[in-house]
Length: 269
Image (cartoon, rainbow, N blue to C red; front, side, top):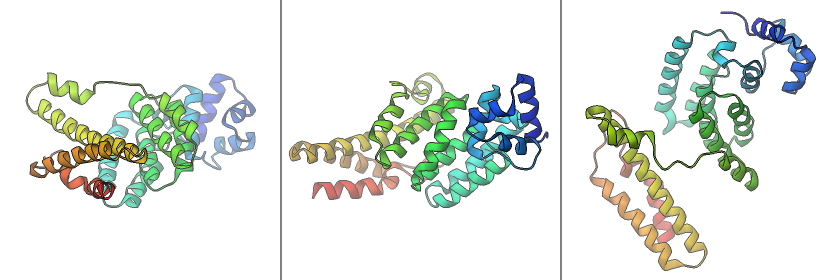
């Protein structure tokens, strides 16, 4: 595998761009670029997507990775990360950071990283990485998810307008890939899509009912608020009889909505 500094130098010369112009684009000194190209230092991980974007290549191409091998290895890293998501977010973060040491700037891993560090309150880093990611990723789902996570981070630090601006980049879609697959595919493919969409839809519906209920309660419309909250409560209770499809999930909707149940009970009191 070619060294990153050598690759940057090669791509820069192909474009006939000086170190100064390249450095200005990235917001760094030309001395920093020189150190990269000489192999003395490495660019910060948050700059990798911007470097790839500048040269019109993917981050994997920037590192001369075998793309098929990278996809399989990244999938393994994400699977390991997912195992820790519910129980130990610090461990999940470490899994992804270790993965980024092997595959710096990988879109999927960076998106996982901002997802977990947003849960840990590292909002400034979320925004820094998110900005680079939305400009450079070739995956629409990664871009839109990054905007969603950035919107949450902006809201958390009190930047309401920036949160709204990020939301505006997310398209309004009234159907999902899983929903279409559940309707149109057959057998196990249909079943898997329907199971996954069922959980996503139930989660979203419960969350929306709670959000509406809280808003109505804040505006003094207690009867309407309680109606919404009781509907959410009934939906959750209905899933108590559901089974967990262990091929796709670790728990049922009922088991995974403990916090929502507590919040509803508090709001109803």
